[in-house]
Length: 356
Image (cartoon, rainbow, N blue to C red):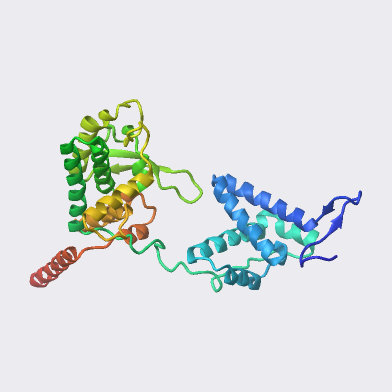
């Protein structure tokens, strides 16, 4: 038997088709793992990405899963040259596959022992996996705007709308639309895609709870479809801006039957890319740092609610976060708020002292 380590060559009876028992067993394992993930309602894309990682590692080692070792896994990661988040993703995919084939409920350990004379083992452990070094591995520039920066941004947006309307230019509708969109992003703490995918019906009055809106395209858990979630209106001025857009501006686009809240001049739905482009233009007009993005408005929403004394659990639910720790990574309390909190804490402490 020649070839790479771990490749078992077997020739079919007619001598024409080379068959590898190892390859057959691996495909059976992958098929079973695929069914397990499908039963969890994971997306085909995620399942395919994970399977690709397993095949990539098998190709790197030249071995079958029942021959893999921790040393091989470490060499693979060391040779990859990947970003930290990519390393964690790859290690996670491979670890999940081995967790599946090592699970006695699926019978692959005994199957491998009978058919290959060896059993698979988990090759990743706490000593050879990349640590989750922070709760948020995104760009550190995604910070909340200060209230002064936020006001400067909205002032720049409103100034652009006034100038466009005063000059009679055709683009004033789009300018008004975008100025309102950013107020809605901040006023309800939305993600860029959540905002772009809003329909008019999402903010229709609900007789049971008129203060709530509905988001159909909330951020999905990994491998799952977008989650619908409800958000409460806590900034009335944003609701007033939205009502004005709906009543006075959106009808001017001439496609009342289209479900999208934010329409283009061609009668379609606005794209997330155009949201980015408009934000960049008005960010520059306001003299704000170039690293700020649309997502910073969401960070601002969370931080400003916390500064204003909102209950952290309520803020977490508003943001659509599953974990309080995620909301905490969005929160940067300003110096003025810190001073207020300190004065309040000191006042309570001294009042307690006086009362004893």
